[in-house]
Image (cartoon, rainbow, N blue to C red; front, side):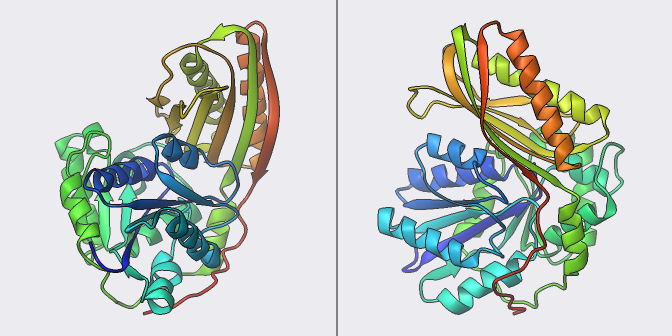
Length: 370
């Protein structure tokens, strides 16, 4: 690798599969003997992604309370902490899925202010192909309102590399249609097709972001009023719940039923889910974690990590983002937790932490246009 630490940022809208891709890249580098540090980011606290990545043995720092652009000093402090602890050769940063303008507010400032410490990789932006096909009108299905779509399209507009993820879930015809549309709309970007889940196409992409540096070009224009209005349409909910039962219960099945309950409530109310993740860590378990994901209203909740045995106690972490009033998200979660307790006799459900809100207006620490 280089004398400088290499900074890799993997962006993309909520539900694009960023965390799975980050874990894959980190594991690939680690297998080659490269020291890696991960930086996660969220508008709130108690991030599922952080827990999942730590459960796989990676060194992780989390930046809560705002996007990288608005927490730039926290971003560099996180890198310093990781440097002191493990001296990473590569930093992999996963920004908030509703954040854009990352080139002007993060990668260019890093290069200008900290250019002696970091080399900067091309910016990758992942897309969920089903979501993208719907947003571009190539297929029917639930999608977001115009100002949320503004953020989605701006993310793609600033990408050096657009990565069509989850290609294992779509047909060759769908892949071809989406690729052609992206090439037409964003001619300056390199378009790659991968499956972070099964590994298809990852070698080419990983080589592109670990063996090259971002080229300087004029940053895109962003209407921060529209950007702020788009983010404000999204409801954000993070919760931590303690579970304790009189007899062992199937944690994987409990997560599945809870996810289906909350998803069903929101779907009935017409609230479009952007991303909904939960983890359940058993009491006394060492790095054990069940993880479930929902990325659209019509997506079947999927367990990406499971527990081998029933549990009697554990901690549930809920991250829910949807285009909806935060109060509606809280009501759906409350209803789901109540149903969970009723379905498992003797199960005590205790809410430990809850925050639900709309993101505030982005206020970048720095913004360099080249």
